[in-house]
Image (tube, rainbow, N blue to C red; front, side, top):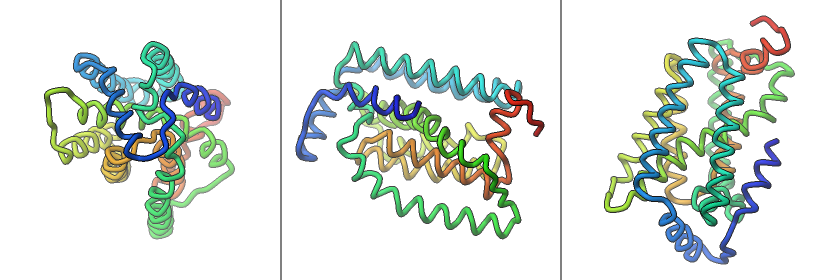
Length: 247
């Protein structure tokens, strides 16, 4: 499914650019495809999705239905916008031309994060890696791409490109980081980790837009974080009811 999403969204690229300057110019032109009203509605929809997480995942414990519904809804939205506004996919960061460049920048951060995860896990005695980590590392990047689209592309990107408004870069990054951290309330470790991650990713996105790279790394780091620092099994939390595995 992740490969299908990757392929489908990549088909909507419009400009074939050969240098970074031209890339940035084409992305800036594509920003005109979205009005301020549409940007406000998108941010509002992101906030509603975040509130839905507290209701359906935390309170009702409908983790899998919420993730599946959210993924399908936003995937349909992306496909619709790509068909009606050619060029918007690349503007958001659904692109492959700079994937390697962004991945190389993210890689040292990812390696350092993994070392810290393992170190904290050993210190706490919370490392609990089972075969469940395999499907999580395969599936979590899909959810990671969705999250990065919502909280980075639709939040950071929209705030950056509001017409006749010049939000400071620091405000944009901190606002998105606080929002991303609060979504993971009341888990202290998750709030701290996602806040730091969102700051790094926000700055990265403002410099070089690529949702694929950010989402894949987010999924892998998130999965590893659960099995090392948190001593939790997201596979059971997500699919336990479906396959009748008790927590």
